[in-house]
Amino acid sequence: RQAVLGARKVHEVGCDSSAAGDGEFVILSCNVSKAGLSPSVPSNSSFATVLGGYVGTGLSAKVEMLQCVETALGDGVYSYAKEWRRLHIDSKAFQAKDQADFLKNCNAENPSWPEGLPSNGARYEPTVAAGAFQLPSELVRKIPLLAPVTGSVVPEGWTLSDDTYVSTRWAVASGGPAAEQIGTVRVSFSGTDWSNPMVTVIAENRGGFLQRWTMGDSWLCDGFSIEEVRLGEVSKERVFDELGMAASAGT
Image (cartoon, rainbow, N blue to C red; front, side, top):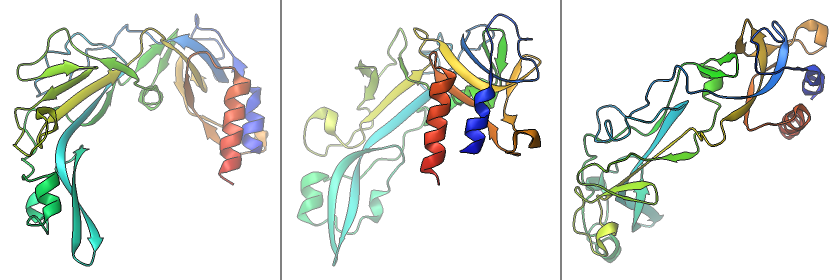
């Protein structure tokens, strides 16, 4: 907590000059820029060309298949249900596929995970400009990817609803509506919200490059370090209040 309180001595700088606060612990609220960013596309998938026009600080993919899931209840009893999962579940190892619960709720094996789907997770740009400053990958990864991203066309074999792509090409008959068949796949993407590109960054300025700031022994808190990113314009008082509460909760 002492380290967080001491860090309130941060220097507030503007966005126009990378020399502002050079060598100092700084806080700034600046817009991230598209300049120098490459298109972020999920390579080796049906969406590689669909999202070819998207540019951002990163792109996050959420890929799920509707699968049968087994839950052990004890004493040789198992329950079964259809659930959206990001990893393949091998139903061949299920223990009670002859029981009524499996036949009622699943009644089909999970298909193999399809080839050609995007990988789950996020990919980030190595560096991003915020005003006149450069954010390295460590800070870029702290910028939330919250805005839905879709392409101007829909890949063959897919439909688009509520910013989510859905395909039943791998579905197997398992009872219920078509969109609730085991093997149905849904994919969604999220990226930079360019309608609100401002970020507040707290770090050390080294010649225009922002990096983790570490306290020296002159601060009486030797070794404490910090690099933070918040969406929008956030006051230093609010940021350090939040850090102080987090530090208190951790003790």
